[in-house]
Amino acid sequence: MLLRTKSLIIAADYSLRLGQRVKKRQNRLLREK
Image (tube, rainbow, N blue to C red):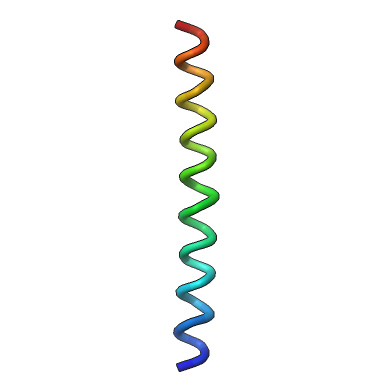
């Protein structure tokens, strides 16, 4: 049970960082236009 919550937290943290990276890329593209 503890292992599952730990992996869930890791997955959430990973998706959050991935989302921030995508957001930065989108902002850069919007600025270039």
